[in-house]
Length: 402
Image (tube, rainbow, N blue to C red):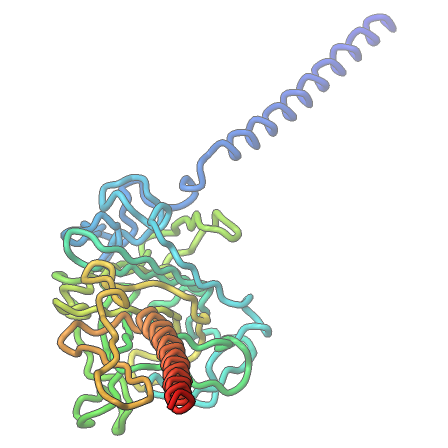
């Protein structure tokens, strides 16, 4: 009997040990499987569409004509390629704006700042719960099939049934805009504002385009009663834009830092815009924009206060390299005449210059011309002095010989 009890005990311990071993192997296998599953597995519809214009029926858009970018599928991943072979995961020339960490250290516009205000105040503190708490934005642009395309996306931490986002696209930069205190946004006539609005649980977004106006009648102003202002809004349509929100499910952001990240439903939106079709780049012009930042309005009203924002990042949105080599083809020249100072003349029959880049070229050319004029002036003086000395020498020689 004691021997039988000992044998039974040994069998029990072997069974217990085997169960423990199997449990450890099972847990290890689960971890290995979890690590082997690609990031896309815990988010994103297998169809490649994460957007519904109404209800739960998938209604994603194909790329704009001439583009391969999936700006209307409501996600960031390249695969599947049903709605475009290019997406945020693999687009060329990606620029990312990353916001400060949400909470007391976050920044926002304060003192009642509105879109038409170039003079703004940046404050620190948490974003109110019912307002979009932005985390980052993405921008990319390209020239394809004879058109300039712009791609924009935003992300936020909170899932709200509506969103009112604005992307401000400036020709000039505004250094230090993210730091607390008073700032003046460096706006130039013709700067752009892309509005992105949706309501009712993230239906098809309404996309708009406004331009910064500095002269003329106030009837050009969309909201303000005085200049300068954002001009009347141009509603973008399916011929020149597409857009989507991830209102069906969570999606994956594969872009560093902290990638991959799962974005809950209604926390990601994107758009693709044909700038040429929208009239931003008319034929025979040379335009360039060098800065983009994202901000959110308190409501759908354009005159509502602007709250959270993600500070500007440098970009290169331009049609200059397609239209002409600005700075090289815009010839600066000195006029003929006796005036001593340098006068730089631009042939205004040529397309407009490439803004910052062309101004740099023109300034460099002007400096070179000024230096050349100075050298010519000194060479002329030296020639004149040599001529006077030679003349005096000949006269002295003549007098000495007489």
